Amino acid sequence: ATRRGQNNEVIGVICVGQDITQIRAMAAEQQRIADDLARLIDSANAPIFGVELNGMVTEWNRKAADMLGYPKEDAIGKNMVQCFIEPENRQSVNEILMKALAGSETANYTLPLLSKHGKRYTVLLNATTRRDAKGQIIGVVGVGQDITKLNQVMADSKRIADDLTRLIETANAPIFGIDTGGKVSEWNAKASSLLGFSKEETIGKNLVSNFITEEFKESVHNVLAAALSGKETANFEFPLFTKSGE
Image 1 (cartoon, one colour):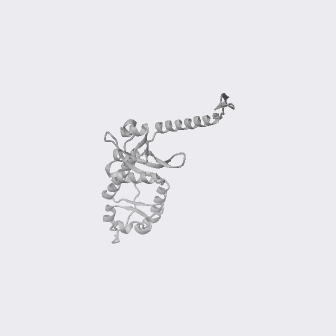
Image 2 (image 1 turned 60 degrees about the horizontal axis):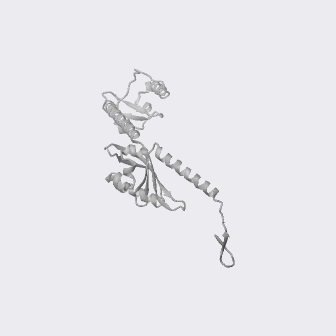
Image 3 (image 1 turned 60 degrees about the vertical axis):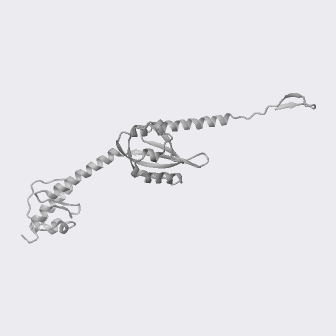
């Protein structure tokens, strides 16, 4: 500030300083953390997107771009729901984003996605509220986990299990199964037609006590007990009695 004398003539200058060394250091540290976070988001092996209060995309990492085929430049500023979510899922996704914008976060939401090139993905999505330094909500960050292959494996496993069930049921040989307590858990159509007991009549009943002739109960019990402990038996013969007593 200018320093003046009695007659208002300039006689000097007064300087007042403020030490901002620490402030600059703090600002630099905050910038470093922000840069590290930006790199982490962009290089993460999971699709990550961010939207602001009006639903427009503000973050779109490399994995999201690779999966869906839309580069970051094409995604930023576009409406997330309208531009990148299939019509049948738009309402539910919009509800999740609105909940997060209201402070209620969502975890493990299964989201089907369709890429620019027509490839379908299934993503397990976590929608997290994004806040500014004052704690005000400014948007949502969505972090996904690609579970497409896992779902395919589960579907294949279910298909194999269904095929096995049909094979057991339609086999031209009596097939039964028991649980660890010796109770019937499987009873196929051939066993029903051969012995006269329907599946409904046998499931949950003790196999040895209810369906094995008296003189073979001990030996059959021993064979089944051995199998339950991991020791299998082949070509073991034992008579069964039918519902009519034959």
